[in-house]
Image (cartoon, rainbow, N blue to C red; front, side, top):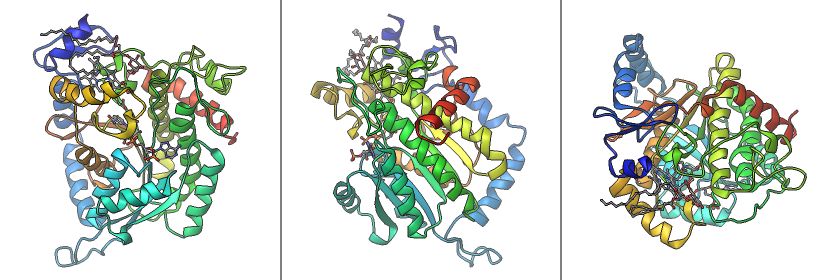
Length: 392
Ligand code: LMG
Ligand code: NDP
Ligand code: PMR
């Protein structure tokens, strides 16, 4: 009942880390972080001054296309190359469009449906010289490896990788599987991206671009320290027994925690894996490579293809509910600008961060739930995943 009431009182409701509901006049935790925390986070940083200086330098030195008229000493930076998975619709397409419009990026649209991607790029008004479509089906590890080969053969450097594609199967009664026999949501959203990003890390590392980034899209619904993350079924990876068994639904459960199949939960679990993987990358590689690893919750983009498998009534009511009741709704265009910031904004170079945006669309470092920031679980998910995708 507390959750129900809370839906109607978005500006006064918060859920503590332990998941207890409570009310506070000052705080709004609908986006996973209280406003007072945001203020703390924005203004109490001991390195604020240094950050500002760095920011100015970064703008001057790393912004591609800066003209020599304003910065005589600085060279114009080459165009960056960014790979965006699932760029044929929704957030991925909006991000590709936003980046293309700057003229500073060449976007590799890594998509499973070439024709759909071509049509999408055209209807978004993207200029031909700003993008290349390359085939990638994340539900097949062979396809992931082939994509990496073709990308390397293209001869382009890799400056930023965005793991964005996902499937959500809330109405499925029975599990479906990837080419290698992993449950489809975790197989696509997590394992496909896990192999892709592990293989492409080498390419990112070789790039001479000043700010190299690996971004894995997360979500509020995988974070049980938020109201949205408490709508059943809740994400929970348990002791990872199903993942360790290969998620094949035969001699092991199709669910990470070993329980009965639930499509909505499988999606939320996959998002927890995405957020844990980003942090594990950060711990293992940030210091040595300087690569920025980041995740984000772009806002509730209630109109995208993600909900294509949901019942029609849900698809009609959900955007209305998010716009007028939770007020968590964002347009595809706005979400694309947010992800584009994480790709290229000189002020978002901090690694290991899960970004979110407040109501004025200002970015802030958000807090992940206990499970989504569990160091030991992140290590185990990493180790099991590398076995499943054939890297260990
Ligand atoms: C699971 O169900 C599905 O089983 C699964 O397949 C998958 O889809 C998964 O997370 C995804 O969800 C979750 C299910 C149970 O939640 C719902 O289906 C919610 C439907 C109830 C909709 C009531 C909305 C009321 C507001 C009206 C606005 C219209 C827009 C509606 C859009 C709906 C989009 C979600 O979830 C729960 O059990 C969670 C507990 C929350 C109960 C929901 C009630 C919350 C709202 C309270 C409204 C009370 C109305 C009182 C009126 C007072 C007027 C002043
Ligand atoms: P869409 O369904 O619009 O986009 C998903 C993209 O993933 C599509 O381009 C789709 O391709 C692609 N895709 C799906 N399966 C595969 C596959 N096997 N191989 C390659 N590509 C594939 O959804 P969104 O834009 O909403 O979702 C994008 C990301 O944003 C996801 O990571 C999602 O979890 C996240 N997110 C979304 C939120 C929302 O409210 N919508 C909120 C929080 C996070 P195709 O076009 O061929 O179907
Ligand atoms: Mg949620 C502030 C409250 C909030 C936010 C930001 C979201 C985001 N949702 C909120 C609240 C609620 N939702 C409440 C109170 C309910 C019960 C009525 C509710 C229900 C609900 C359903 C049934 N919400 C959903 C579903 C889905 O099927 C979506 C989902 O879980 O996909 C995994 C979803 C979402 N709500 C969100 C967001 C961002 C989603 C979908 C996308 C995602 O996490 O990637």
